[in-house]
Length: 62
Image (cartoon, rainbow, N blue to C red):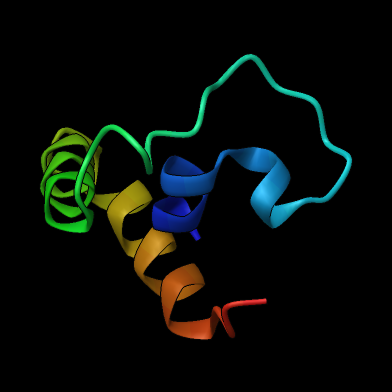
């Protein structure tokens, strides 16, 4: 889900949700977005990484 939000903006995942965070899909390749997210996640505490891994495993993409 973090990838979809980064690529398309929050509105791409939660229709109608307003956010100041822009979509980066037109400025970055999928590989660049993935690399940035890997770096950001590497700075998270272990507990947060475990939680995010569980959320990602249960993400159905919708």
